[in-house]
Length: 539
Image 1 (tube, rainbow, N blue to C red):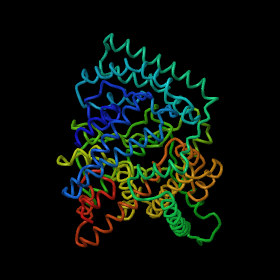
Image 2 (cartoon, rainbow, N blue to C red):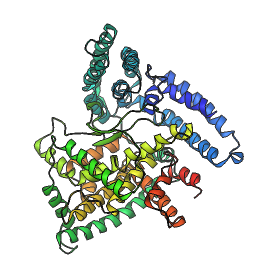
Image 3 (cartoon, rainbow, N blue to C red):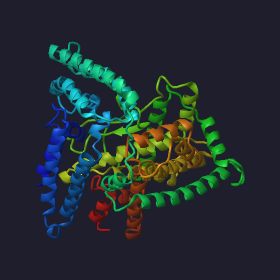
């Protein structure tokens, strides 16, 4: 039953299937028109009926957890397609760039096989985008603007794909590529024409947001509970920031603007530029890897990791992301950490603001989150578990993945990591780590107030800059991200609470265990949601 359900879900979403590492549908693009969505929704309802009929009381613990995960994933997909219905108002989900690039960037199969899939998807692009134009009705202006920016990178993706064929791409590829690039250009012109009239409000509203939080966090938390816990934690973090800033500046914690002045000094002392940001992150990754290995914090699985410049088609939402092989991928392929330099059309003031936010010290904390011992390490552990269930691989939890990464940031600081050898390097990192704690917590607060409340842009930016000490460029970007997504920003805070509580409980149960023993156990079941991991661990 699990296999047939998952197969059906993957076949209906070939781009996600490729991303997860299942390559049976690499030659296909999804169909998101109204008739196709209606058919998928009916099938999802059939799957929910069959899964609900299973007598879960009679199942062993691991199978019971798998059943709960699969029920939750099917219900979440049903909710997205039948209630949120992004295919009708969000042009970003119709972007074909990822569908092409994911076949190119990793050598999971011989080049000729991947090229054949690329050609098939390129040939499908014109019809796919025509379907988009007939399905998209009222659109969000911000989503249209972001889709237009990403469409500019499609030709570059096609150029990357041409490298699979060597010096002389076959005629079939050349024709498909030319037609696809022209189709994307036509679609971009269509989007641009409709931008002035794009007035759809991407805020979900209280009812849909409450349901979205329930489905996508897979935790028994209401928006009010998340908001209350986040606001209480933010008060604690702000107090710790003042205390640490006072120690760093050797001033009273009551001194005016003490946190902002401390952070400004760190930014002044650790400047970063567009040309230097990637080398800075590479250096941070090397230093963090050595530290994790020397302190024996957690087993480091074998595997290649590369720091790359973020592809243009993926810019506009996050500053950095970990692009790891999917949990169903069996080929030995690398993991990428993509870092976005500033856009070419930014003013000098905005670039300066950006790199004061992402200064040389904060980049170490960011690298701990995205790479070591955060996402790169955790996802490598998940892929290395050969006897994990199909359901847990398919149903990997973003809440756990982000929660572990936030936990990893705190772990390395707590165990004595420093970004350099200055006498006050630990305090500098602690200030930036606390600032990231504030950012994580404000992510949850902002998401709840955007989608379940009525906060506007000026109030949101003021909140992020005042309570999170963010630079204006970061605050503006986070406001945009809150509108571009929904129920994703709280995954950091909720996931961190879940992972931290699991680790704390394991330390009480096993007081003589080392860091590595505790952390290897936490990572030994893949990436299930925290509540499911608790069940698997018998907590």
